[in-house]
Image (tube, rainbow, N blue to C red; front, side):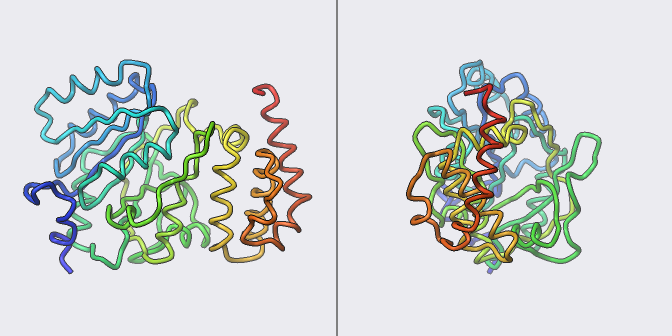
Length: 310
């Protein structure tokens, strides 16, 4: 099936619709967001929309974006302000608004090589069809070094399959909008600000593979105020979000070690959230019971490392 007509339902009127939405969730990142904007201005192909999801910023993000929107950028800029809720709620908001065939998240502290959109859209138009959920491509540091390992030398893979076979490092995921929206939203828990984003990706892996594109489409800079650098803190502050994701993993994980590790993390998250019903709620009760001593140890480590923040 030709992809050019596969997703016309996302267009408003079906004419002159861009292929790709680049969405950027942001919170108080006006000081760095221009780097991403300038990289989009430099794109050799303007077959995209830039959707900015402002997660309740208190800086001058809105004013900055409004100035950009007045310019002749060669691409459409959309801006959506929402109450602060964390990265996963930004993704929920974005997926409700996206009306293009493909979408990709570029974080507020990251940017794209000048030919990234041309590479992505060209590769999809040549190879994409309804058998694939999208494309998996490379993230690199500013010096050009690949983050983690290269992708395997084959046509397609699942994200979970890539990591199960020894793949390492963050990768850039470009998804079909109809696929990503066919799964339930990320749940939102009171007083928590994080749910692992791989929830939707793991479910998609059960039905589709991703086309492999061994080229860099995103330049990454991990900021000290970013979630990637504060995982132990995230575990402590968002236990129900992590427990939710562990339960999803329990349904699909393969192999003793992986299942046991998942249950260990589930136990620790349940201890942090003081959920007394965690065994009954577990999809893998036997492994959960066996993991209790190890989960208790992990809980102690997480609590100790966060004691100064309590």
